[in-house]
Image (cartoon, rainbow, N blue to C red; front, side):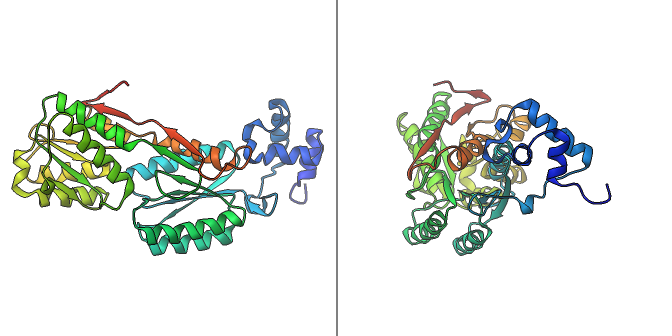
Amino acid sequence: MDKPPTLADVARLAGVSVPTASRALNPGVRGKNSGSPELRRRVVDAARALGYAVNPAAQTTKGGRARTVALLVSDIEDFGSATMISGVMHAAEKRGVSVAVRTTLDDPLRELELLTVLRGERHRAVVIATARTTDMRREQALEAQLRTLDDHGTRVVIVGDSGLDFPAVTVDNHEAGRLLAGALARSGKRRFAILAAPSIEITSRDRAQGFLEGLAEHDIAVPESDVIHHAFSRDGGYAAIDQLGDRVGQLDVIAAMSDAMAVGAIARLRELGLESPRDVEVTGFDHVPMLGDVLPRFSTVEVPLEAFGEAALSLALDDERPRSGSRIALRATPIVHGEPIRR
C-alpha cells in the first residue's frame, strides 16, 4: 500500500462493517467481551496483515472522554502502591483503557493541583488511592475537587475508608489488626511496640486501634511511649527504631502497621546487631509477596492490594453509574509465622 492503512481497509479485508471493526479493535469497557471471539480474531488478523495500529490518542468515548483512567497514589516506590498499580493496570487492560498514574508525595496541595490537571485531561474515571485523613479542611478541599470532576462526567472511586461520599473499595483493617494481635498473643508474645503513621491517617489508625484491641483481649497493654508515629514508609520504620531507644531489647514484638515500615525497622535493627525474629520479632501489614519469599515465617496481614484494581474499575466503568456511597468490601487475612489465619 502506498499510504497508511485505514480502519475501512481493515473492515473490508475482514468482511465486516467499519463500526464492527472499530468495536473489535477499540472494545471500550466491555474489553474482550465486545463481539464474538471469531469476529474479533478476523478483525485483529486483518489489522495485523495490513499493519494497521489503533491511535490511542485519537480514541475518545461518548461525550469526549479519553479512553483512560487516572490513578492517584501517595508514593510510586511504596510496596503496597506498586502492587495496587499493577492491579489497576491489569483491570484496565481487560476493559480496553489505559492508566495514567500520578503521585501526590503525600502533599495535600500537590494532590489538589493534580486533580485540577486531571480535570483538563478528561479521564473516564479517577481512582484515589492516597492516604485519607481526619483533617477536615484537607478532606473538604479534596471533596470539592472530586465533586467538580464528578459533575463534569468523570467517575470517582476512593480506595480505602474515608468520610468522602463517593463509591469506594474498602477492607476491614481494624478487624484484621485485632486478629493478628490476638494470634501473636496466643503464641506467647507479651511485650509489644507499635510503629504507625501519624495519627490523622485513617488506614494506619484503624490498624493500630484494632491491634491494641486484640492485645487488650489478652490483658496486654502497650505503653503510650511504645506507640511510635512516623512516616508510613521504609524510612519511617527505620527512624522509629531509634525513637524506641534502649527499650528495643525488652520487646518481644515490634508491630509495624505496614510492610514498608517493617522493612525499615528490620534494617535498622540489623545495624544495631539485632536480628528479627531471633532477638525481637518484627511484623508487618499488607503482605508484600517478596517479603514472604525472604522471610518465610514473617507475620503480617494479607491485604488484597491487587484486587483493589478490579474492584475499583468495576465501580468506575462497568454497567450503570454507581450510586454515591457504593461500597465493595474486600477481606484481609492475617498471616502468623507464615500461616494464614482462617476465619
